[in-house]
Amino acid sequence: MGGFGSGRQGGRRCTDDMRALDVRKIARDGLLTPGNSLAWRWSRNGETTATINLRVEADNVVLDYRNRSAHHNGGEWEPMNYAVWLDWTTCGFGGRRVWWRCPAVGCGRRVAVLHGGRVFACRQCNRLAYRSQREADDDRATRRADTIRRRLGWEAGILTGNGGKPNGMHWRTFERLQGEHDAHVNVALAGMAAHLGLLHERIGGIE
Image 1: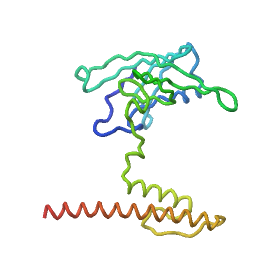
Image 2: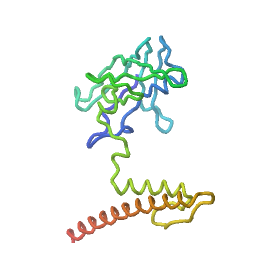
Image 3: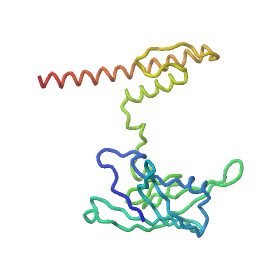
Image 4: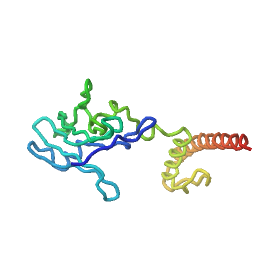
């Protein structure tokens, strides 16, 4: 059975810093059948990085794995075995949608994805941010400007200048997108200028 490390340390972690267990994917693969036992794997570049054993019961899934934390027993492996309850909701066009009930003490939120540390729990219990929430304002502005550039068919990169209106796009839509793009560019350039000013000050202090 595969194991899990303690995760990235320092600062608020993001959802993609931890292994995700998505009940929707398990259900789509036809594996959420009572009595079924399986090994769920995570991989990177074709190499398996971790494995968790799942045993499907009528109303829950039992998770069986090992966890190793630098703050637990001097880094020794700790066996983990506990049930995560399932919940179902009715879809608007028929059928049912399955959810996890977060197993963290005092939670029980209905979620699609659990994130693994020592215990698999919801994003809120793990105090995880989305990657976009960790972006600086200028990085976020650059990303949003680049998204608009792709939609407009402009050359990539906010320093390459603006292009023209795509064929078939209404002028009102084009002018709105161009205005949003230019506003994001202004924020991005202001951030770049601030970073360069900080760098200059540090170099000046060394000199």
